[in-house]
Length: 212
Image (cartoon, rainbow, N blue to C red; front, side):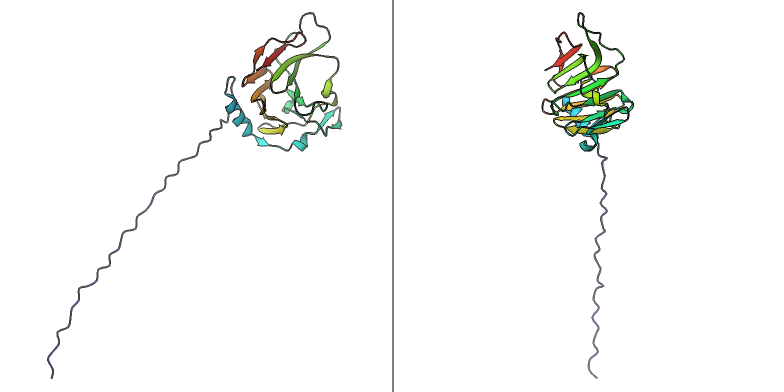
């Protein structure tokens, strides 16, 4: 019989288990730099532009007509739109293209007819070409509004044409000219200017003028 063997006793293996680490991700709610409220008078033009741009875009092709007494007139070279309820009606004159827009406002405190000027005074008539705003007009004819009024631009919607973009709001219609970096709010209170637009001396045939 051979010598007895002493079995080798190995140390039990210890499995080194690294505890799993739990990573906690904290999500910071994103905040929008664009205010939801309409720009107040005196707001910087950048804030006005951001607010208008945040509107829901609509197809300009849906605003190439005007309706009067149930009769629709196509405006292939013009744009026409209205605020809900008809407080503001705006159009481009096909003869002038989209470089200028005209609006008819229902104003609560209309400007008086210029002294010594005769003719049909329209205090809510507004002409805006980006660099100048004319308020009130002596009109012998309805101009482009002879075709009627354009479709409603719903609150919160934004319409782009030429260098202009307009957004409808319950506080009024906000329109900006991006080439000139100016804007206006058109409402029952009249015209509120933004950007470099300031009240300046007006021609005798209009009620008020804003310019840069």
